[in-house]
Image (tube, rainbow, N blue to C red; front, side):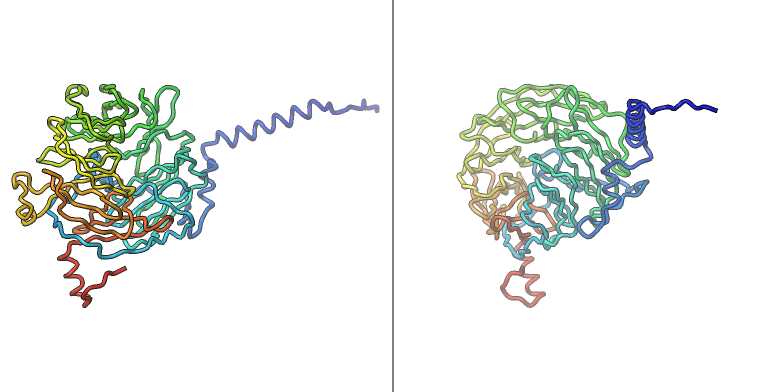
Length: 464
């Protein structure tokens, strides 16, 4: 029996190889039961530096608690002492602890805090949690470099810390141990600071028009199917307007109200100058600093109608802080001078050249005790509200709100880098002692220092 010889056609072999490669790609790319490259990396990475980065197939849910940290002490951005009760003017630096991050060239650009300590991120790939004595409690390294944007600021609730990489990876950590609760790759570029809202984590990402809000359940890291879109430019900052049921966004020269029920824009107001920093919201009143020499007040109940604008000698360095009862605004300008403005009329009340030489440019407000009100002949009606601000070099000062009279000046061991953690009767700062060297500084009331030294049998020296 004769058989006809056959030859394998080369182009058929090439087509078979291409078909097989395509089938394998589709299988691995689209299979929902397989790890993504980020999840696989996290599941396989373990060790002291990675803090047990094992990702379970079903993340263990953590009940999302109350949010424990807001920039400027609250989401209204008013920079008011969260304790609210009267404080002494007599403070002194009592303890200083060197920061031991264990990393080379570490620089904390974003600093959040609660009673457990500080949580930092920056332009490196590292998130570092520090205790109140400066030791690294835990740290985590993202696989991909953070780039020029850097990591977004840590967000904290009662159980977890959430950090978003600008390229779209989201990590939720147990804030005590640093163990990962869940890790979610988004494959989207984040274009504005993420924020916590109710039980959700919301991340603004790039969309074809405007931005899209990726909504994630904080408990388990599961992304919701509905992702609202907003006609708004990237890079916006947010403040809460609780009486309006809105979030107030500022970007370029626009102030925009976002309805938090429908995630749609209620109204938008265009200003004559770009806005610096977030809005400050007091009931329905919205205050903004501009890159020009102005502070402006808008009425949130009237779709952002401009109520007044105050002409200043120098541009504000940040958004203003608010003094309750007195109804005043305080801020440092770009020359380092402290300014006070009547929040009702916009009248500039005074400007005091304190020559702030610290990186911290924020002011905040707190109440003084009755004996201090009497001592400095302050108006009892206003309950001792005063302005607290960084001043000169490596110092922060307390000022009377009427004429800018300096009430007290506290020397620190380094430059304060952020608003202090209000920890009971203490203020606790992260300071820069010198380039690349940082410390945790505890500032206490003098009466408490005397009591602690007496209990320890130490008559004079500082700890740390």
